[in-house]
Image 1: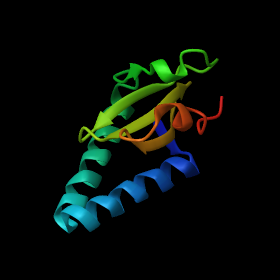
Image 2: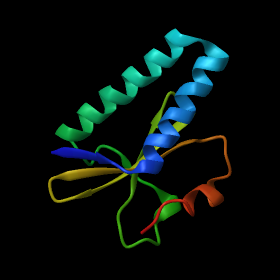
Image 3: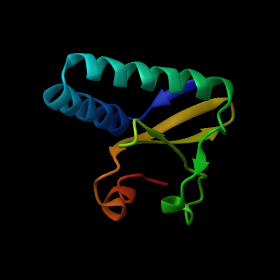
Length: 104
């Protein structure tokens, strides 16, 4: 499996990583990014490990999500032999407005 990150997912990951660095330090940011890399490696092996996300139940694409560090959500979908990381966001934000960010 290969993984392709959408631009808004990259930007979301970086925003969260910078927030963590600012409020919790560089080591916490490094641990967060290491956890993201670990989950991406897992997705390459088992792409359906994330649960179907109820925010996107009415979509034609089966979006899945994985919670990272209790405060971040990685949204992705699988097509063929590719995992597409669609978005990455802070779970403390309003889910309705965030679900509108994901196209599909």
